[in-house]
Image (cartoon, rainbow, N blue to C red; front, side):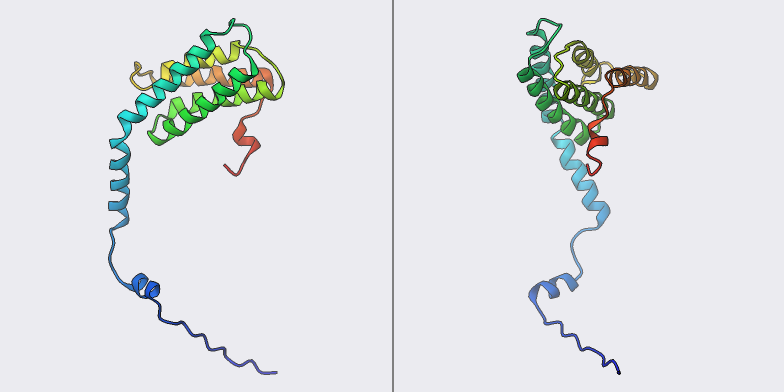
Length: 168
């Protein structure tokens, strides 16, 4: 049995012609333009981060400081998730880590049907330290804060949400 070559026909289309043409902008220029566009939104992003932090603080302040209602924890989780997105977008690495930890603890408490407010209160205090416009902590101070927050996850035996959903 002999194999005959297969003829492939590529019809000329407008899209194929456009793709073959040179033009557009260089990758480095596109990246620089994207970074500039993000920077133009930084003030608005910082305002939204601080508004969301204030909303979380108000929820905690309205509690009896020993326990939180499930609805309040769900609202905290929603607000913290928004802050994670904004912190990542604007390069606030430490705030991003604190907020991810808050999400992990809050979700863990919800899953375990616990109402403990203390671990959430500690995270709320930590997020204020890392918020845009706050006094910058040294790398050692930041590492200490993040290390102490990690102890809370260990204490409750909660695993990070990212470990539960490795595709993210």
